[in-house]
Image (tube, rainbow, N blue to C red; front, side):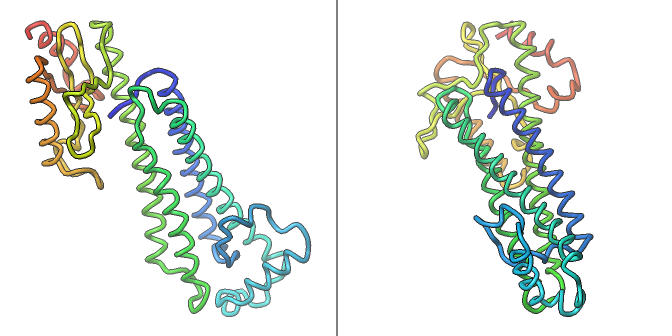
Length: 293
């Protein structure tokens, strides 16, 4: 799956790169919150409240009184002043505020893409996985904090490791999507010089998933020569995260290729790594393959 170099791809790249940077920043703030022992200073989840910090002494006293009930205050920070509490409070507040912003920055552009680009040939819903994982991260964050509010002086290290691991997983997924965009763009820009009529995300009614009744698109097509070019990523050869297995991917590839051949199309396959890193003169080899078909 790939996106093209129109407005969609430009907005998508900007969104993914900015989102990646924001999550890196959130991980850094989270780490500092952990190092300053500030993570338990807010003892309620406050999913839809707590956007603004305490604005008067009454509100500050309320948050401080709630903090005084947990073991961390009773066993470690007993006698802490309100001014000292404000320091650790603001670290946790900043972490949560940034998390809310990341959530909105994930969802709103996705809705924009769905509204304005859903009917374009290259639109994909796969980026909603990022929003799902960000929401899951928020839940796990509270699950982690709750482990230190009743009996323990600190949060569970196991829950903390899950929280951090999921953040790193989200970063890896976003980075994967960014690489996917750039390697497809590189291939497209080189082939379009040879065949200006090149079609991206080539879809036909004769190649549809029988279970979902959705198109199974081909990466590229040179229509006047009835040539299809497929770009194979590592998911075709080894298990990648929670993607479909290589065996299932091979079955899909075989089905698509049979559909193409039955309708008079020839299929050429390239490896994503070869295109991305120019491991050999794949442009010349592709050109020779095209003129001999």
